[in-house]
Image 1 (cartoon, rainbow, N blue to C red):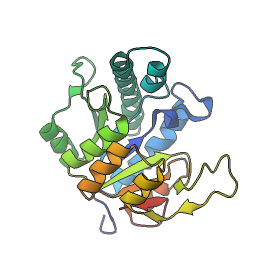
Image 2: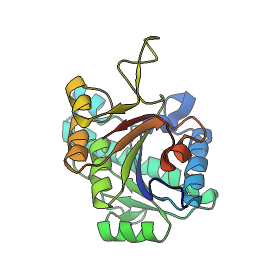
Image 3: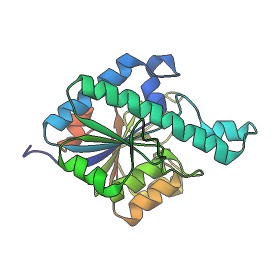
Length: 237
């Protein structure tokens, strides 16, 4: 516990990450592997909140582009994040970790409503807080929800788990000469339009001096490296 760099973190996971090699839906093996990393971090004394996307089930932006009314599409996307949150909760609790799902859209039979003070109290008691349904408002992404929840819960860092080793100057899966950035400023991200988080989330982090770490969640041990201050991924600050 003494060697922790960050005591309270906000972990942002995309919905696509939960799909694993299947590319759609929820892959139990992938979710279980992620959750083992989270359990290891919690065992070190890390207080951990999560925001999970819903793109593995439904993408509001894509549906909107196909003709669906944007607000309706976004609400459907929020419901998809609740499904993902419950799946992650189930996997974490099977590993012995106490959790709470707090939703920005009230659905009392499934999870608790998101109340900031209640979320903070859960963190203080050592529970993993899984924030679902984004901000509860259309037109805001789960990236923005992650930045907002990080501020509200007084997290020390936003950690974004991805499928690549950090932020590159171009897509490393398409370009073999892509260069990995070890460190960036918020303005670098905004001016170069790098795919770290959306511009609203990055601006919110910048205004509140909240560092962002982008790392490969598929690499075992990487989350432990981030919380203990070892090099893993790209730091934006």
